[in-house]
Amino acid sequence: MQIIPLSEGSFTIDTTKQFIPFNLEKDDLQQRPIGSLLVEVQPFCIVTKNDILLIDAGLGFSNTDGTLQIHQNLLDNNINPLDVTKVLLSHLHKDHSGGVSKEDKVLGQTFISFPNAKYYVNKHEFDFAMAKGKPSFTPEEFKILSTADNVLFTKGDGKIDNYITYEVCGAHSPYHQTFLIEEDGQKIFFGGDVAPQYQQMKNKFIAKYDYDGKLCMELRQKWWQQGELENWTFLFYHDIKTPVFSF
Image (cartoon, rainbow, N blue to C red; front, side):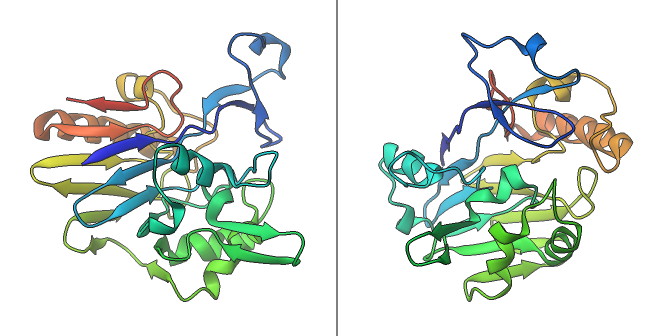
């Protein structure tokens, strides 16, 4: 399998839940509000034998020419967004779901961003996100999932095409789900925001921004031990230095 990180850049985020661009060479974290976190926003594309997978959909920002950034990142890696066959969504916080749809301001309509792909999202996560709304969720960006004919709502744990395992772990958000992709002996694990950075796998701590910080910590320990035993490759959505780690 081929793994392609699709970095959308570095950002700081504080209690306002706003993602403010951060230049690693010029900006000073100490000049941002106290408690600001520095993170990468980094969806992933995985090319398998039969699929082009997109894992989470980024912030939904557009370039100056109006091209959706996640589309441009795919094009820069010689992948046509129309060729994406599956979009796997861990949860619907705005930095993971902004690229689900694209607004056409001329037509005044919103369209699904990957029309030839099947979208996989937990139904309870969708309902919760629609009800909860801002600032953590932006329903107008993903409400189209309720009417699009290429969306498959998952419930609980299961498998997709017998090689992608999804499991509801909660922890970061109530119905957050993880993905384990297995092909030809290779195992790729995406823990979303329960396991967002390499260093978090190595240290025991409880984060206040998680729905259940203690459970997040316990799951990270569990996955790290299992990954070491089974030679997993981890994908880290918010890691600036180590987006991919393999045992």
